[in-house]
Image (cartoon, rainbow, N blue to C red):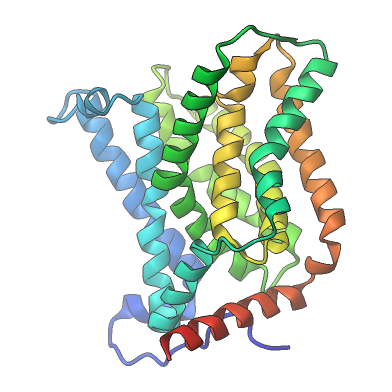
Length: 311
């Protein structure tokens, strides 16, 4: 079987951090990413609570404080992913990662599945479970949801999935099957969101931390396998994986598609069922692509394409 990643470059630097990143890329990624994310969240927390200047940043940007925190947290992972990739695989590895991030030439059926699969399933299931459709201004609804989708995708979710799917989950799949790799990724995926508790206007206790971690973990255990299946189905398109993440957020959020279209309490359960159904059906469709050998072939294909473009 061919190597699943670009060749490891020989270390010519005396930097312990570079050597650590080359030897243990996932541990180094988590250390750097979480250190930066938590440090920036701490500084923003001090500003938000009036200890240092800058508390009006969220209002100036017209976004909620917790949404600004979420952006800070997930975007901290991207530079960590780039550093680890460069330390282990050099510029060739970084080019390969960016090539996967902008891989858009995928069968149109995958674009349709990514854009419409979750919203359609969620709304349909919620209606079957007793929710009712609201009367809405359709042009305004489409314009607002599309704008939010594009902004979330370009600013946050694409780069978030370059880190989680493009680096962390892909490397785990070299040692584990795709489902175990997704479940393992769900653990740090849940932990990176914990600082959000300090910006929700509620008391923060050990119990609330444990409860939040449990909820984020359950969410990760559902979402990470879905993203893993679509990565394989789309031939390693991190662009479509990031877009699917944005579609999930737009379908699930309090100002999202389901909440706007539906009146009732069934939409949240319908959303979870829709994720499981979409993952299961897609996994059956692409079952021949879920093996570790195909993952290695994808990596070799990406490396070869990167080399040919830079030759």
